Length: 322
Image (cartoon, rainbow, N blue to C red; front, side, top):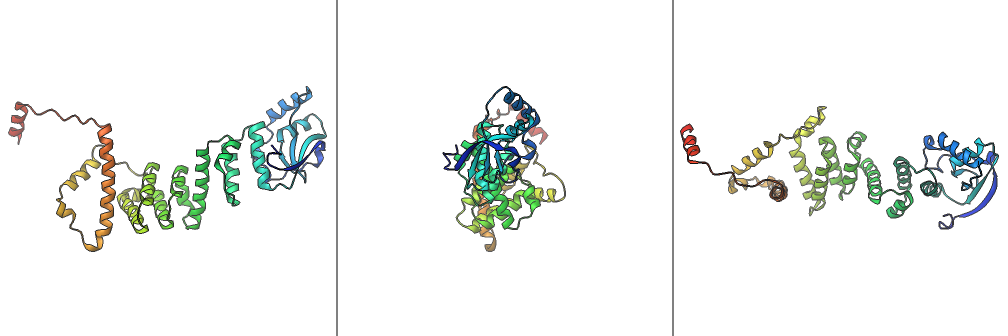
């Protein structure tokens, strides 16, 4: 593995344990996960019975990179030296990357938290992650790694845009990674604030971002986000007052709104003041797009069997009641 990475190293079969240093920044394993006692005991017992373990890994300053459990097991057995690979000229990031691969292939598998900290640190250091290589090293799905990277990049982008931490904290990870794909800066800020203030479900955030990214101009994209903000005014007020957004009652909300629209004739819908025509047109297009999706899904999911025609008795009774 060291040769594959073109790392200059030498093997020392008897490195003095007293020379080995514990320095933060060269390992990705969280301190609480380093050298668990039960694992140290197992390794120590195996060593007493002649088991051979891989050498630990240190840099030229004898700062430990890999081998916490093996080292503690050797100390538990009273040893004062240990076999080690000594690496030369490796950066802290190189050391952490190697630590990840060694732990995943030879040691106790790392937690998602530890792997994510490593990836976040690499991105923070200005590195361009190679997702497939990271997936191979860590055993974590490339889709999950891609989402982690997007979430970290979202936090940095939100900070630059002046979006407060409380808004970022209000968003789940999946919403953050979705919002990171927003192309235009102004639209990113507007969509992020809307998603946080209305506590929008991720599916709605994805739809808004997709529609905004497909807009022909920044003005059109902002109009789409503004239309969504107007549509979610009740939810925004509820969240601002300390309450969870209320879901619209089933079988009432959409039917009432559609019924209201159907009361207008075409000319009435077109009767819009000139200064409102652009924004109104954008909202009409948004409504049309939603209705296209709704009609298609309703055809697939609803029971569209026509109701039975009323009998003569029912018709007569209806007329009598009228």
